Image (cartoon, rainbow, N blue to C red; front, top):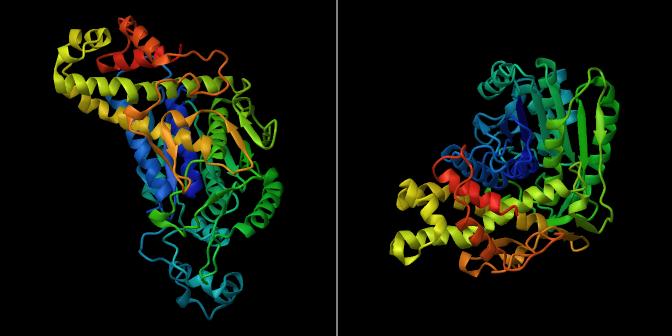
Length: 484
């Protein structure tokens, strides 16, 4: 079975970021995952970061035969091209897009003038729809074409060729421009054209801008988020009887996080947030559901036990948070151990020779299999890059929140620092903590000296995974030993 996730706008892209990491942790049901970004802002910084993470994931998945394991279990197939934008020209505006000058004096032109202000008609849209879903809806409805547009037609063909039944899941914000306009428009077009189960995660306000400013440009404004949300929810309430969606998940947070008010482009590089993790968990839940015929749309919401706290038990995984804690925890220990101990050890062996740093696990997984260390390190660079991506994402999920919310998921201080501007960066591996017993908070059995015990287990592993091959045997053993 194929699963198709579409991230709409910058928020949708960040939801896909969380979904990629859940896939790496083995949280997806069996089947391939197909991703597509929808964004008029082709240089959006948030989406660019996610594309890099996706490239690292795909490189790891393609290079290493890991066998049957939750680690990187899901094959992710990015659309080609991975990004769809409604604009084919540079510096587009609404009036140019609809050739306003050709009909401005007609009744249609007069109606256009009533519906859109002068600034809405003339502002360039190459960096998004500026928090105005009325603009985005008109553009999306005109350009999303599953027959003629190359990107959409290829995406449609993948779904049509999926003979086991496809599930499509959309993610985007309800209060901005691109997500709010694309979510209903794309859903309607997809459902009308394809026989699929359709779901979506709608993100209600969960951040606010630190500096609104008033420079005369049209743009998203925090003080309009709630009004936009209220209007949109009324629309979805009326839309409930249309049978478009099989399931809709709603998430938001009243303790909104401060973000920079970047109009778009490379400067709009918003950090990951725990609400996007909720949206990704919604996608895994939807993909794993069995839907009965004619059961109607289902709407899902969730709440934390305490509004000012977030714990593992607040994450909706059908198992009181234990499944997501176990999966993310194991991947976090794997990434931490690989970056802080095993990748440096391999580099030292390559630089100083075998006898300079001898370890039983190296003999078993590399020497006896005639794996050349220099070639191995070149291949393993993608693992190093993905582990960096994952740990940085996890630090942001823990630490990128309002001061009024306490999050108790991980202890990022073991490997990362929070800068004065609120951004996170990884420490250099030699400065990672030697004690990771509390890397994952709320563990029932926190043990000290985790890394030495892991080293001991690795030296005694002897590769018990016959379905893994080459370097994949080493990665598989390290991952499995990190689950103990």
